[in-house]
Each structure stands twice: as structure tokens, then as C-alpha cells.
Image (cartoon, rainbow, N blue to C red; front, side):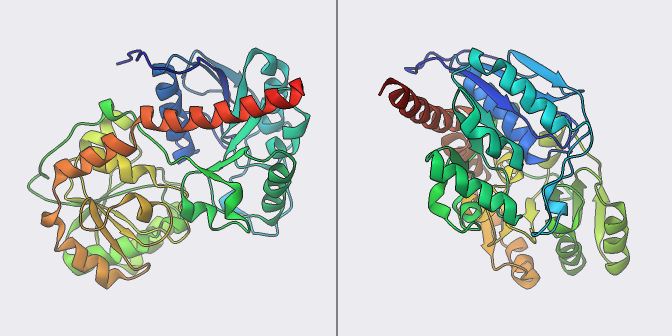
Length: 372
């Protein structure tokens, strides 16, 4: 349900550039897709005009989605640190930024959500301010250099979701920390798990998510783990199952938000075992919004979201023994407190407030330079 909230803000016209790895709604873009949807919603509630540039086949969000055809970009997390920057023939990334360039004068600012070199390179050549909400930690040397170049020439244009994410880069201070947010109205608080009291896991089925540790946890505790997410690496899924024959993994596919929140709310806890530094961890706040505590490694954004002993437990990275101990303490967590934490810090409006403050500062600084 959409509703407009009267707030003391200057209405802005904002263009969001989506990830070029897949259409909105496909799940290929992972957390970037959810971030974009929820940011559009929060900005809209505040009365801002928001349009989106995204690959063809995307779901409709905001006032308009400019659908752009082209070959999808390969996701950066599959590439080595020293990999060169490449774009496929007929690149959708190039076509998207051609569209951004064509329509930029209709907007006060552009917010780029893609972790790609081209938007960074184009930033000083654009007529309106381009801001970059970086969706990943440091993965590529060329990208690190391009981000540093933007900060050197146009300070204040970069933001990250968490300090853990920023700390993976050579100069963490170049990032503003804006967190993230979800449309809390779409999540129902469930004050107790169902009779099976299963654990939950939400994320792409790929090695960086650490599903093998979840399988080991299941084998040790005897708990069923319900698994939701895009089957990105089926060979990895089968390998985990073979290596952990006593694990009770129940794969339930990729679900849209409304269905997922109802399902995850029936779990006793959400388990997060990332093997890389998660920039934020949207699924943590999604679970907490339904009242589900989060058990996470002390690695990346999720460890900043979870208040240890209050909304879940943070355990040493890669320590399955500590994770198993945390499972035994789940009942100590007040599920209503999990929801309260999300309402206070991670709603779409709270996220929009942080982003609009950032946009206002950049636009005002840009205008001051023009007027000088």
C-alpha cells in the first residue's frame, strides 16, 4: 500500500541507475534490487519524484522505469582482483548510461547503484551531480582506483552501506555510511516460530554465502534449515549436500518479498555465514522485521546490524561451534524487540532521510561551485 507522508523536505527529482547484471525482479541483482525498490518507496513517501534506468524486462518501480536493452554485465564477485574491466558487445551498461546522459537534465541528481567502472569514469563529465551508493566491498583493483579518483576530484559523492564494507577499501574515509532500509509495512511480526522451529537461510546459492557451514550446523544440531534464494551455482549446492549427508537442508526456491517474509517469519532464527564481507545484509533486517532473531558471523555488515544478545547473536567468523551454541540460546531473544529495532533504524523512510541529506549536501555544493 502506498501513502504520502508530509515531511519538511525539499522535493527532489532523482534518477536511480540500477545494476546491469539483471532486470529488476529477476533476483540476479541480489540485495541491490531490494535496496532500489525500498529506496524508491521511501523517497516517494517523502514526495520526491523518482525514475529508474534498468535493463529491459524490469518490474515497474517509481514514476517510470526506462527499460534499456543490451547484453548483461558479468557480476564483479565472480572476477579476480586483477581482472581487467570488460564490457560485452552491445553492453546494457553502456546503453543505460547513454540513457542517463540523455535525460540527466530532467533531474537534480543521479544515484548510481551499479558496482561498475563506467559510471565512475563518467561522473566528472555529467552535467548534474552523480552519486554512487556502492553495493560491494573492495573486489577489484581497477574499481578501487576509479572510486579513489571520484573522491579526489568530487569529494562526497561516495556512500557505503556499512563501516565493515568501507573498511575493505584502501581509504574508508571516502565513504559516507547510509545503511539501508526496507518497507516495514510489508513485513508481519510473528511472535513465535512454527512447531518445527526450523532455522532459515536466505541468499544466492553460491560459495561466498557459506552454505557449507549452515549444512554443518544443521548436522550438528539436528535442525531443519529452510533455504530460500536463487540457485546461482547448482554444482555448489550438490557438493554441499554430498559433503554433509546428515544435514537437513530444505530448498524452497526464490520467493518474492511478500511470500518470503511470511515464510521466514515461521523460523526460529535466520543464519548468516558469509565467507566474504557482505556490504550490508538486507536479509538480516527482513528477518528481524518479522520478529526472527539473526545468528551471524562477525564479518561484514550483518555484524553491525545485529545487537548481540538483543536481536540475535554475533559469533566469531567461521566458528560453527559458536554458531551451534547460539542456536541453543535463541529463546532468550525477544522477537518484538527485533521488529522494534528495524522500525527505528532500518525503515524505508529512515533510509530515505539519510540518502536525501546526502543528495542535498552534494547538490548544494555543486550549485555553489556553479554560482562561484
